[in-house]
Image 1 (cartoon, protein in one colour):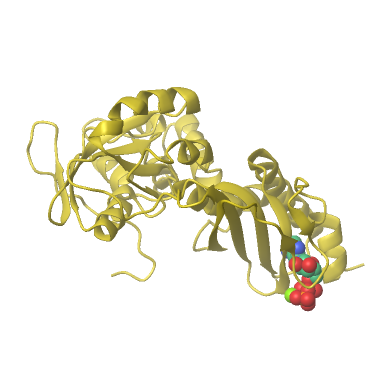
Image 2: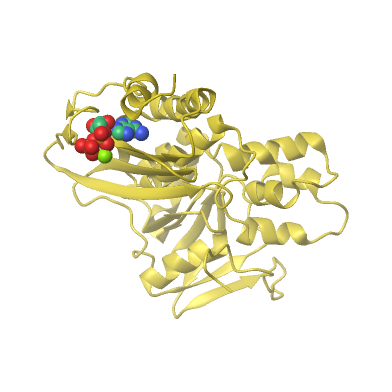
Length: 323
Ligand code: ADP
Ligand code: MG
């Protein structure tokens, strides 16, 4: 018997995610009701994944469930927010029970790990599209933003970049299978840097998550702050899988960490006075934090090699409607 919309919600989504004391009314009414504690700001973000655009059509539905929530949590991480509540708008070609169970598994697992509760959504028929809206909280006035970077601030990146882009580029290639698998995991199961974002409150002068490629996203941060940046491309941390995927003197590896996209690491700036606290943050979060350059007066990104010679990036980051 085909599932109707209400059976589907009851079976796969009601009760999927952790209960929270701050939810007065969750799934089932015309709208959800939550209470924001005094002294906090509400931080809200939404992101859509379209099949064939944001994930390859052969992607495991467990990964689609994970990624749809992860890319949204990454925005909360970049704002330094604690995740609280999520909405899920799901457009499905059909009510496929196996697909829904797998999707709910991926979504539910990450929601439980990050303490976010699904409090509502919408379910419609059409080409596969997943839109998630997340709500988080920060102590009043403490959200991290893109516009606080100042000349002289150091630029940091978390983790290692480029593996997700490599997975997309090398899907059909004859490359080291373990490294390909590791890259594919980065593409399908990004890890939102929530603990890092939280630890950067009151420390970073500006922050952004890297979804479209380091250079593109750092460019957005610089533009919002009215500053420029100088980057040492040899200092940019590349994901360990890239070392295995790149052969000999092939220099394509420069492009993936700089412009590849889908990394979901954080890029942030730190004033001189706070530099000494970075090592402790790396230690407490267990995430490598690498200094890749410095904010400059003026505008634009200048990329150099460690020896000072100029570097010309091959691509400018992924743009949906760009040339
Ligand atoms: P309405 O017609 O009033 O918009 P719906 O019939 O669309 O309400 O949804 C019924 C309830 O189920 C609402 O509380 C809504 O938030 C929730 N809901 C609908 N789709 C989803 C979904 N995919 N995940 C979680 N909750 C959902
Ligand atoms: Mg509705």
